[in-house]
Image (cartoon, rainbow, N blue to C red; front, side, top):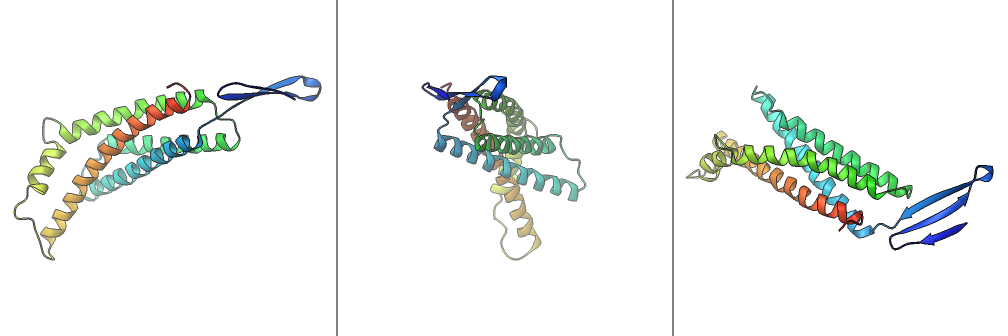
Length: 190
C-alpha cells in the first residue's frame, strides 16, 4: 500500500484483488473548528424549530391562519439538522469531502437567507411590524402590569413572543454569518 501526503489530505493506493487499484483520498479536517461549527448550527436550528412550533401553536389556539414562513423555517431547520447528521456519519466513516460541505452549505445558505429576509420584513416591515407592535404594546407599556391576574399573564406572554422574534432573527443572522464563513473555511477555501 503506497501513500502520498499532500498539505491537507492523504491519498492511499490499495489493491483490491484481481480488480485493480483503488485510490482512497482522505482529508484532514480541523476537529475543533468543525465541532464548534456543527454545534452552533444545531443550536440555531433546534431553537428556531422550537420557536416556530410555539408560534404555530399560538396561531392555532387563536384560530388564526399560519403564515407560510413558520413551516418553511421549521423545514429548513430540520434539513440543517439532517445535513449535520449526514456530516457526522461521513466523519465517522472518514469519507467527508469538501464538495459535500460546500454544496450542502450553499444550499442551506440560500434557504436560510430567504428566511432571514422574510423575518426581517416581518420584524421591521412598513405596516404593522412585529418590532413596532412590541415597542408600542409590550416594552412601552406604562405602567407595566404586576400582580397575579390575567393582564399580567397576557403581558408576560406578549413579552415572551417579542423576545422569541428577536432571538430568531439573531440566530438566523448568526447562522448565516458563522455557517457560511466557517463552512467554506473548513473546506479549505478561505
